[in-house]
Length: 267
Picture 1 (tube, rainbow, N blue to C red):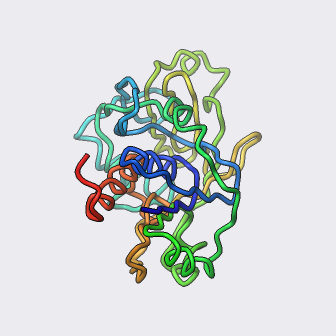
Picture 2 (tube, one colour; picture 1 turned 90 degrees about the vertical axis):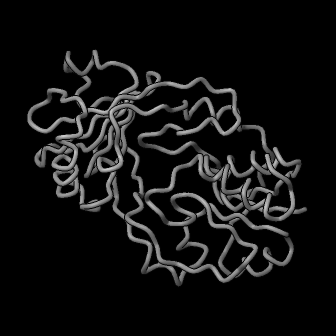
Picture 3 (cartoon, one colour; picture 1 turned 60 degrees about the vertical axis):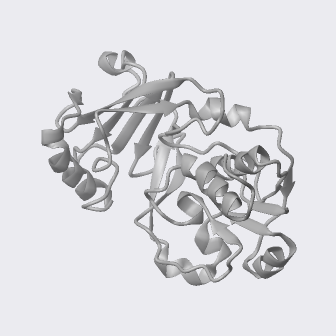
């Protein structure tokens, strides 16, 4: 059984772990040096890794800088304000999908555990896909869909965001004492930042416009209506499928499921 994985971000590495858990050593191809990414990051499942669960609380800031704890009664109104501010979907954005607390697993701990895999530095071009699908029994793509299948470009909607590695108010006493394991959505239309997270002590703040020291991030918008004609090519990940609702841990289980359908038994 031969498997090629395009991309070595978290999604690609979790797909690789699924392969290895089935006794298959995949060929991992990546055009760039692997990095864990930027923005609000945590896993919704441990994917078989020895990770300890943590509880992450959701809160809102709408007027001023005081926290308002998540509550069902305000969720819809906050989601609508967030959509107006960010340009995200009016009916399916992060606040729509939020809950009071979520059981999560540390992203950076998982990333560290998945290091050490052999990765071939190689840019996969659209013209390479036919050859790869002939050479390998299964090709898993986690690279941006529009880079691998350019004819999907019109379906791949996105927004640009900017992410810094600190609090939005680093010198403000109330924010300096922010409790650990919390995500705060900012629905104030006049505030430059949209979302802040502090997970296991690691802070990240997302902005609508560039700020000093911030990283530009492409945020997938909606879901591409793309039909893949190559039967042995599996599209995974928020970028690989171009689906804003796709969570990283799903790549592990989707890979497992495909391998089981190909005769590699249940986990």
